Image (cartoon, rainbow, N blue to C red; front, side, top):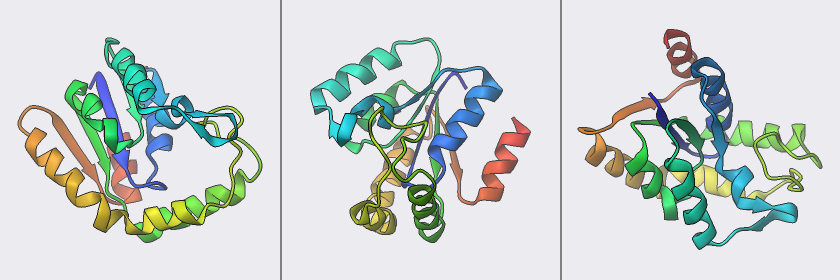
Amino acid sequence: MRKIILIGSGGSGKSTLARQLGNKLKLNVYHLDALFWKPNWVGVTKDEQRKVQYELVKKEKWIIDGNYGGTIDIRLNAADTIIFLDVNKTICVYRAFKRMLQYRNKTRPDMGAGCEERFDFGFLKWIWNYPKTKRPETLKKLERLSKEKQIIILRTPKQIQKFLEEL
């Protein structure tokens, strides 16, 4: 496990697990949200996203957290380990809502500078619909890669904790 990506719904715990893994494995962690959002929630272009990711995956070892489906293949192809947090949508919505309250009008540690947390109904809706809209495609990609990559699917907070403890 030298090149790890974490994917999953918003609120699944990707950024938290990425930080914990980074500390435990002594690997640099790159949060795509922090790299792809400029102040006041101005997103970078797809070209910039690709450029940044191609540079990141050239590094010898890393942890990258984030989905960004339009460029996910860059990370999937470069990673040796793919961790999919396939957490129940109710837990994810709860966590995202809690995070919105906790960091309201502040910037989270895994976000770009100047992107203050705010209530975002569209984001909560995206999380709620993730199992139907994004999960099936993700599972198909993981199935195709399962012979050449280490695929780890964690479905509950307890599984995530046990995975960390057993590393």
